[in-house]
Image (cartoon, rainbow, N blue to C red; front, side, top):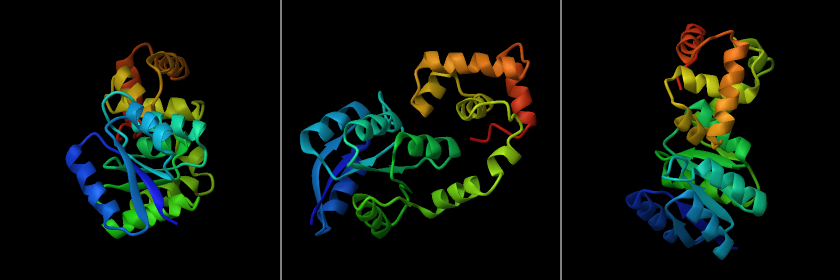
Length: 214
């Protein structure tokens, strides 16, 4: 059975490479392409792909937000993130949005094809670097043992890490596929829980705790 693929990436050259990859495989069929998250949702509605190859960082709607919308409307569609981003925040934001797989753009063509086939079959598949990060995260007690601010929620921890990395609220909203209002509310909670009076103080406390390497 041929696997119907939708390619989503804002770089025409990379889309061309994926187009050739799909065309060279007897098991895959390219049904459409999209250059941003909003277009990805439209193409999904029009063509009903089995697998969506999704970049994360694109103009406008991010790949994470597009994934959330696609999975909510078409649960049978498998989303495979194919991106340059290998930081924890991007990986876990994509997984929380419903992505079944996460492979880096430097992966070999055979690895990408195997991932497409696995995701189409309903399996979860991750590249070696991503799999190692997930394994570390899932180790017993890792989450509670290692985080220096246990009073923060999971979302607040993600936002704090990005604050420590010097990201602005709009940049954080884009990275985590949240509204700026949600980010502002969480930042206020972080200030209160860390007993900080301003953003600079939050950054100092977070960096002293080893955050901000995202």
